[in-house]
Image (tube, rainbow, N blue to C red; front, side):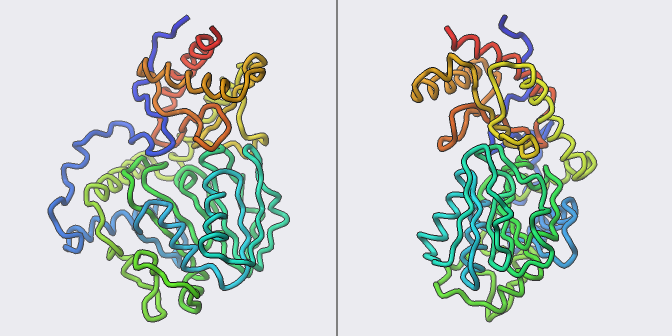
Amino acid sequence: MKPTVKPKRPYFSSGPCSKRPGWSLEALNEALVGRSHRAKPAKARIQEVIDKSASILGLPESYVCGIVPASDTGAVEMAMWSLLGARGVEMCAWESFGSGWVTDVIKQLKLDNVTKHEANYGLLPDFSKVNFSNDVVFTYNGTTSGVKVPNTDWIPADREGLTICDATSAVFAMDMDFSKLDVVTWSWQKVMGGEGAHGMIVLSPRAIERLESYTPAWPLPKIFRLTSGGKLIKGIFSAATINTVSMLAIEDAVDGLRWAESIGGLPTLIERSEANLKAIADWAAKTDWIEFLAEDPATISNTSICLKITADWYQALPADEQAAKAKQIVSLLDKEDVGYDFGSYRDAPDGLRIWGGATVDTADIEALLPWLDWAFAEIQG
């Protein structure tokens, strides 16, 4: 039967993600619009984003944290273009964004001493084969595959190369050992539900030492430059951003971080996200037409929760008809105002991708699940 209870907030997109509970435009009333981002109060607000991010995440005191242009993509590209080339590179990829970084390193930076460690959707590469005398680039959580690294035990503390981690759908939702990560990047529009356009980058002392001792062979655009005169541009990490930031976006980021503090900080953020995954896992365990895309339970993402349809009749369909049926589920629930934007990523296997980050209420996940069963019954005809 058609369910009667709907999610109060039917926002399950994996980016931009759901705003925090209780959010409204009134949260931006104090935004310093019309002010220079270099003005003292504006810089204080920008600094609040940096300081609260570092505090909530528990970043080591020796690390620096800053705001950079172009979301997580800009932050990752900045790191690769500024740091790579000093030694060989190990590229780890198991979904589309990681594969994109591989393409950029090989075809854009044109580095030739590159080793690829790749795996199909649902799996992780064999990390035991990674050579840590080289630099290593990887995503912590595969946003389009729903496969995360379960931990960083595979990264040695005495590594010679740098570890560059795209953590955009992991940070603030997973317990990360930052001592194993030399560069960490993310964007506000993922786990914290902030507005897009701006990225964050964290550098360890080892990454800073590389920046100050190595000059890439290629020219760097202004928005990629982290050094000046061979020294780290400290202003980037103390509210003097490279380019003009949106003070509306800054206000929204501050609002999200203040909310995170008010509910108990990182432990509570992680608990909320893991509760969302548990709700879906409990449903999937008793549902005969759905499974996680991730093959190893230890690697199932608690943010970008990717599912595949396994019913025999569905699997017997041609690929294009499978894709159409999966999209029909999303369309049905969109029309019912039950759930928005939870289809699989365009490059990923057909199925569902339900965002379970910390800004999503578990009650809304639980309300969505009976509707998925209803929609699946509907597409069977």
